[in-house]
Image 1 (cartoon, one colour):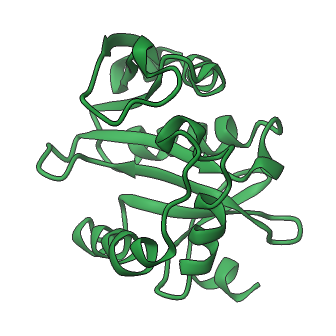
Image 2 (image 1 turned 90 degrees about the horizontal axis):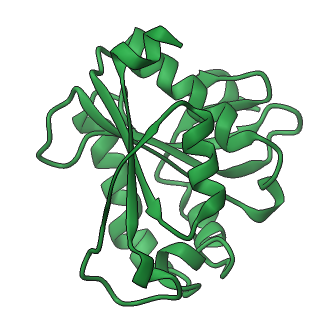
Length: 190
């Protein structure tokens, strides 16, 4: 696959992560149209295709440029066969310090339960702490999203707090959102 050869950001045993391109809208539209994938984000409502094409994908591409292709949102594919499985994120808040970055992922249902979230996230943590000079990585999810919380805990991240953002209520939002963190110093001790 040409994309794998020319634009790979990171490789793991079973995955490769690459930079998104302007041609990737359909992959994002398919991912965000699955109610199960969007359950803890929008209550299962799909992201409108025009929003992905006109707002989300251009913002992803701008972020890659802003952070010199070292941080951002990256398309994830299986090495064997090249199937798109979703995306991973490693980036700071818009106006946040570059040494504090968010770790996240959104995977297609077909990729669930295979350890891909943990595998990709471990590789991103290693890159963040050994190559990119990151001091702290954080991740957030809904309290009721036990699958994502399990991944964060497997990564050695610790629960740093629970908060209640003012968003459109979805099932489980009454329990709040949780934030997990891991510092470079903590990671090095593992």
